[in-house]
Length: 219
Image 1: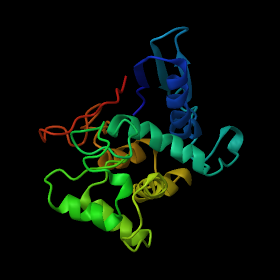
Image 2 (image 1 turned 90 degrees about the vertical axis):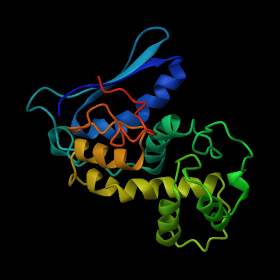
Image 3 (image 1 turned 90 degrees about the horizontal axis):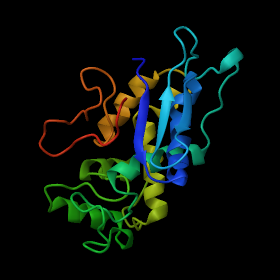
């Protein structure tokens, strides 16, 4: 896939810069150009592929030098970009209420309390990363949590990178997974992202379920 990716309608330069950073993390290692377009609001942020034959693999920069693994703040920047569309970056968000603050107040609950709450609800996605019950159970095991940990900002921000790892982040960083394959894998974790690859294109991989749709545009 060689289409450019563009986010339109960004209202401030600061927000555009927040979007630009994780896009550089995702597309830059493969030789894509990422830049902010516009001299005044609304801005766009566009990732443009290199000329045919001119791109490096995700793990190799120009001249053949290895690209270092993304540092933690770059990974968090990418997660913040995802969370903008999933939860408005609200640690208390729940399905159907991105602005939720106290119904319930997830950041004061333990993991086991959140699991109990999820068991009684049809739509269980909650928190900044909209984690469903089955995923939270898996994170509890993979991160070695007892279940008594409070699901506050720090705990949720430990879970986010683990979700990316589960979708092939480390393999992508090492060059073993293409940009499009990684994007598709991440889109299976977060429905607000487009599937990128055929047959999804700019649609969510969950489009058509009557619940989910992509909120990021593929130009």
